[in-house]
Length: 131
Image (tube, rainbow, N blue to C red; front, top):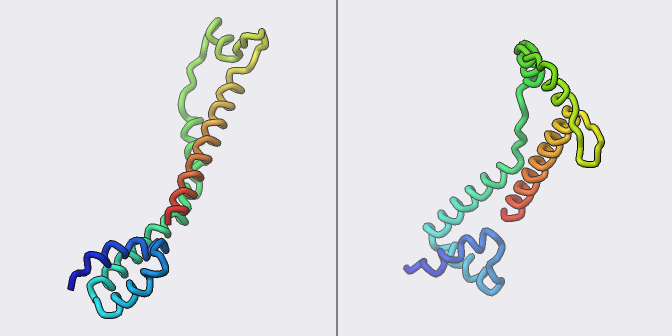
């Protein structure tokens, strides 16, 4: 038997995109074709496994942040001198306002974290929409 026509329909059937007029014909074929039925089961299993990946939440091990902070505190800090110290503590903006350099750095890090979080969320939702 030539199953090539029906094998083209398997993925569309799994995705729910096969037109109604072909669904009954495809299901009738599956009732007597073990090869196509086995391929349908395999594709469905893979799709189910891939769908489960989006639900996996990754978390740092317990105490990870505390260990990192403790290790960072043990590192020696270089002592800036004179002019360098004043540059490291504050920055003058174009409008003449003086802003703490730390505030700028913290703001950039926070914005980067938000951007990464939004991108991760967008990718996860895109992946879920495809499934």
